[in-house]
Length: 240
Image 1 (cartoon, rainbow, N blue to C red):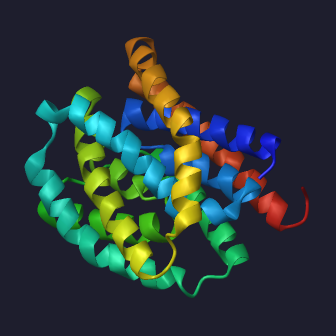
Image 2 (cartoon, rainbow, N blue to C red; image 1 turned 135 degrees about the vertical axis):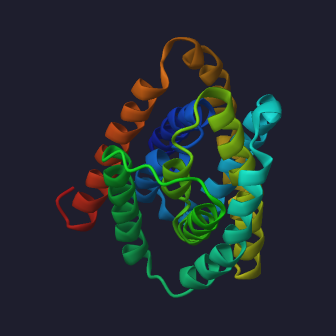
């Protein structure tokens, strides 16, 4: 990877990890389209590992506000979804994966923008967890389903609950990806090289949380995610 490519990815990861630590999701939606443009080999393994690091930090920070019951139901759905996502990844060509990432981002943006609010009852939590498992393992973008079902939460409860779920879910995904051969030495090497961006994003979130309200954070993530997904589609169509 060239120095410019690293700088672009590191910047995307820094901003995405800041959003993840501020609103509970956004790492995959924002960073994945950019990473897919610069170095598709980092998806999903390296990006999921980086997400696990930032979610661990937020889970520890917000541990007293985690909805343990809701997280448990969601994780029950995450298990079969993660396995399905790992199997799906073994048959997806690189170009198809890039377009799938863009489509997932745009669909996620659409449903979250429309303001549909499902009730976080056990059935819906399990369904959202399963969907998140499939998408998170195959594309590293598992946030939209959980953001939908938990969007009535706010502040520390939203960040803590989302992070607790994604921490365990990311570890599941890494295990399944390792079993399918999608995690190797280069995955760990690139994760280590990008860790400073994760640390920087987490530290930045401590300041952002104090002045940027959840609504502005959410719409910032949505706007940047649309831009990234659109650029990815344009690239695959030969327009960039």
